[in-house]
Length: 291
Image (cartoon, rainbow, N blue to C red; front, top):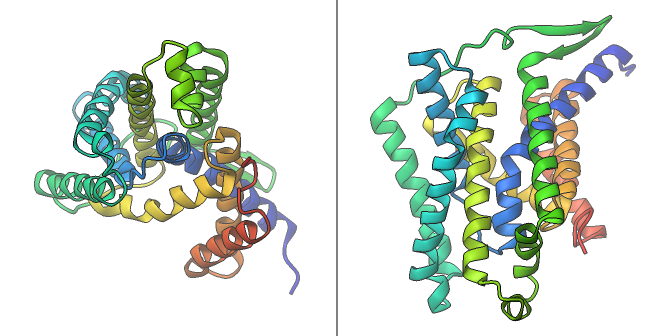
């Protein structure tokens, strides 16, 4: 079978753009799970919450979803700090964070989803923005703006977080807290406070990811479930705690899904993508940029 070059390149471009969005959704899990070892399976629910806030503000005030996400970042940061404090006092402080902590986040996922269903129903919601229906064309190649803008914003988000983690005292303390809490205490830093800041940052990223999601596609409360497996797969594939690895893993997964969906059908895309993950881990268990 001869594959048209234009179709292949368009599928490749779509996969790269999709991978950028996947990176935005995954970065919060890369911080909470990859760095803090907190299995926050409720993260996609916070992403959907961000989508609905962007939807409400867009429908009532006409504000761009990305601008809305930036405005609500402090609220999501405070929400993340509150969730971590409850998690710490109830489970981590008692050494019961393994199974009971997982149940706690599953409960958060369920409560958030049910609340959104009760308030908004199960109808799909979408936003309006001038660029959503626009496409940049270079000959036979297309760059849909509803995918390009989320990809660019996602890469800016991860670049900013990477600079924060590597160039600031608090960022380096976040990277250190997962490795040696005792050493961190000797440097007069409170590990609980540092982990609270890190977890709050991970939830704050969900506001941005939620806005990007509703730009790409209409959403309903249960859409977040589709991303639970993907975000943890990307986190592991890229290497736990590595934000550059998260970008690489997300891009690879996006490209694999796009190429498979284009040439073999959408139903095969998840199977091929996760098969690629298993092969990668078989030959490199620590992930692409894992230590």
